[in-house]
Amino acid sequence: MSLLAVGISHRTAPVALLEQFAMTRDDQVKALHELVGSDHVSEALVLATCNRVEVFAEVDRFHGGVAEVSRVLARQSGAGVEELTPYVTVHYEDQAVAHLFTVAAGLDSMVVGETQVLGQLRAAYALAQEEGTVGRSLHPVAQHALRVGKRIHSETGIDRAGASLVTVSLDHAEDRVGPLAGRPALVVGAGSMGALAATTLSRRGALVTVASRSPESAARLAAAVDGGTAEMAELRSAIADADVVVTCTGATGLVVGTDVVAAAMTDRAGRPLAVVDLALPRDVDPGVAALPGVHVVDLALLQGERSAAGSTGPVAADDVAAAHALIEAETALLRAERQAAAVAPTVSALRSQAAEVVDAELLRLAARLPDLDARARNEIARTVRRVVDKLLHEPTVRVKELASTPGGVDYADALRALFGLGLGTEVPADGPRLAEAVAVDPDELRPGGAS
Image (cartoon, rainbow, N blue to C red; front, side, top):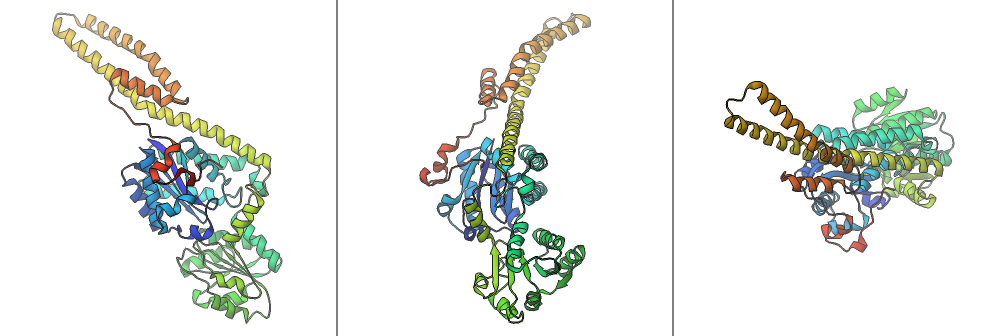
C-alpha cells in the first residue's frame, strides 16, 4: 500500500474552476465512500476548502488509484477527467507526505502562513474517522500532519507575517472605506468562516450584524461578538446600513444579487461600500463589482495578487526555509515509521513460521522418544527455541533497520521470498507513468511536488 495525493487548488486552477469543486459535508461523505468502495483505494481523506479540494488516499496501485480518485473529482466538478488534467496535481509517497505537511503548515495557502487550513484539515480528518474511511495507514499520517502544522506555527516565524483570507480581505476593505472602528459591518453566513469574519471585524472595532439562513446560528454568533442580527429577507436594508459586507455561506447559488445591492446603494447617499466574498462557489453576483461606489474583494482578486507577489508574499524567506527544513525532517521520520510498519507483518510471519516448525519438531521428538523424562524434554525445547531465536535475531533486526532506508521494502520482499512466507505485496509503480494511469499525454500533466 502507498500514499497518494490527488487534487486541485488555487495554485493550479482559476477560481471559476475551483467553484465547480465546492463540496458540502454530504458531498464529502459521498466522495469518501465512493473512494473506499473502489477497487484500488483502501483509505481516504478529503480536504475541501475555499481554495482547494485534495484527496489523500492509501492505494494498492498507483495507476488505478490515480484513475479512481480522478473520476471522483471529475464527477464532483461535472467535468471530464481529460478536461481536469492540466489543473490536477499528483503526489506520491514522500511527495504526498511532504505536500500534506506543507498544506497543514499554511505554506501552500493563498495567504502563506495562515492557520485556518490546519483547523480545516482537523475537521476533514474527523469526518473521515466518523465515516470509517481512515485506518491504520492514514491515521498516523493525518495525526503527524496536524502535529507538524502546529509545530511549524509555534517554532517558526511564519505566523508573524501570515494571515487568514479574512484578515487580508478586510485590509482591502479598509483601504476602500477607511478604518472599521465604529463602522457598521454585515456578515452573511454563520459557519466557521462567518464566525472568523465576525470575530475579526469585532476585534477591529466594527459594529457587527449577522444574517444567516439559520436564525439560531446567527443569534449565537451575534451574541459572541456583541452584535445584532438581520433576516436574510431584509438583505437590502442590512446592506444599506453597512459599510462592509462579508459573505461566506455554503449556498450553491448566488446569495447577494446585483439588484439587491443596487437598490441598497440608492439609500446610502453616496457612501462607498466594500463587499468581501469569501464563498466558494461565490455568494455575490459578479455584476455587483460594476456598480458605482461598490468595491468587491473576492477569491479571484486575492489569487491574482498572490501570483503577482510570488509564492511567499510578505513572509520572510528565512521563516519559510525553516518551515521547509522541518517538513523535510518530519517527512523522513514518518517515512521510517511507515516502512517499519510495512515490514512488521513480514517479521511477525517469519517468527510465527519458526515457532510452528519448532513445535512440530518437538512433537515429532516426543513421538520418537516417548520415554524421555520431562526435565530433559523441557531443556531440549528451550535449547531449540534459543537456537532459532538467535538465527532469526540478525535478519529481523536488520530488516527493521533497512526498512527506514530507500528501497527498504525490497529487503522485506526478499525475506518473504527466501522463507516462503506468502505475503507478497506488489510495490506500486512510480510517478513517471502517471499519464498511463489517466490516459493522457505526460507533457500535459502538472508535475507533483511539495511546494
